[in-house]
Image (cartoon, rainbow, N blue to C red; front, side, top):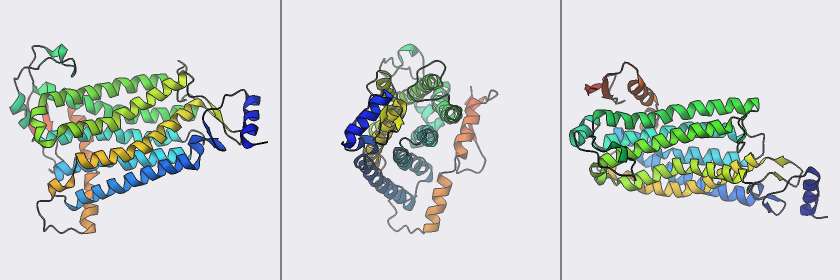
Length: 365
């Protein structure tokens, strides 16, 4: 009897409908799937690590390149975590723990991208000097139809920052909650039951990610003319595609699972894998492939050559490692979050980590 026939008999005995089969097992468990995903990830890693190295080598604008390097790291973190999760495809839902690390960095990238835009434009004070008092144009596309008759104020910029910062806070907290629920057996991908944690986590994520996206849209809409010299469209599209589309892709796979388009499977060894795990496996596989395209897009969006004016610059590996260590220090995001959400906060400030401990107040709210 062939392996396929044997597997079919085991499937019938357990009353589970198998999903996609390729050769002696499902596609996600084949060497071809893992090889395709691995090749895409390692090529993406090579392209991105080379780009990060070049930014560190030509580290001539610390304020801007700090944000850029942090954004670029999303490719190695997304790619490696997704590939390893795919390798442990049906190993007791290990992918949930890998997702937790990836989700935390995902939120970090959103904050860094908005901060990069602020630095491009010279900080809050310079932005406000350009847009302060101007009427907000109504646009359903950018969600400003409810702001008719209002003008740009410092409160507007503060809302844009808060909208992204809340995502940076919600993501890690929810990731930790999901890990705990997973350990207690109360979280399963695609389980929309009110007694499980998946539906509530999905709702909270949807609200948080939508608010963050709205904040980015509002900021871009207000400053798009000022950002024109910095090619904002490709930067916005690339970053938002990597972060937000991967989230909606996961939601779509969960919906397909609920509609039983993605079903539970049994491999040739008789091991049952739940539909939620299969859905997460497809998400990991797709992200591995997508990271190659993301690496190419990010390479075009954030070229290092714009910082190579000093052709005689010499660097050492020690200086590169020191720059990398200083760049990845997350102290600035924590300080900025405290400033923007403190209940007694009355002055809008721009925190800059390259200053020792000084903060520049802008004006009273």
